[in-house]
Image (tube, rainbow, N blue to C red; front, top):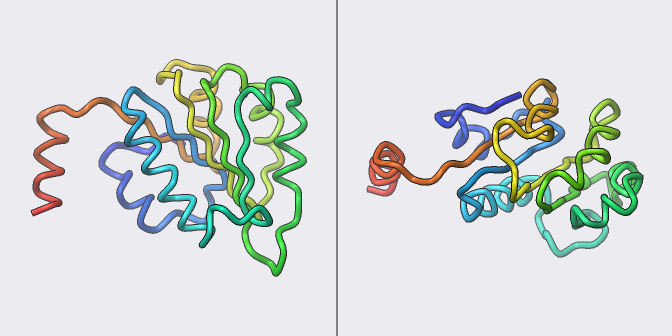
Amino acid sequence: MKIATRDISGVLKCPDPRFLLYLFYGQDQGLAREHSTKIAKFFADNLDDPFTVTRLSGDQLDVDPALLRDEMDALPPFGALRVVMVTGAGSEMVAAIKNCIPALNPKTRLIIRATDVNTRHTLVGLCDKEPSCASIGFSPDNDRNITALTREVF
């Protein structure tokens, strides 16, 4: 499901439990990185804990698309949520993501940061039409965004 710009802050403060996959993409990669880390911290206290957080690259998924499904289905200890974070250009991970979307694990949150995609990319299209996926795009700052940020800060 595509998340409108005006709704991004609400999703980041209190994520909807129906979202099992979060896709962050767009030209403003600094903001995409910041917000993907923020949402990951909502689900996992310590992002360096190898038992609850797994980090994968798009290149790893390109070589072994089944790796993503394996990591998403691994059981976290003590009933915690598992967080799988994937970073890549975008195209190399489409097959792995396409394979996972129909069977997303409710005990896992998949957080993807795609560095080289736009709104017309296949990966974005997959996530936009799926109700369990939050697709969040970031554009470069414009006057409206800067004004909103200024109001928020002050």
